[in-house]
Image (cartoon, rainbow, N blue to C red):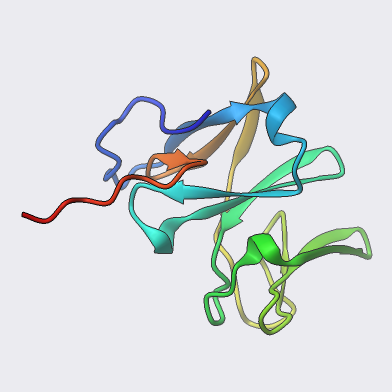
Length: 134
């Protein structure tokens, strides 16, 4: 239930649709961390709120807080995630904050019962194996 579609190198600069897994499984949890083959700084949160999927960078652009652990609230029709560290808020659709901060958001599509996220690296629900140094 993981990983990329097509390019197995995972180091391309060009975004591609990445198969994440079945909608029926992914819709059972409010947020899932998707690990990037590019490393910690490129991980992505996949949110499922009110019947919709959203994807954005997993670490808060303020101080790196874990957005998957944040509260999600609706205000004036806008769904926002709040960073658990300093309470900065980010619109799930646009990544915009009530401050000057901005989170990177990613396109999500549902196709043939699966969820795909458009991203520059392979994504997985499991951590990628660490590179062994020789």
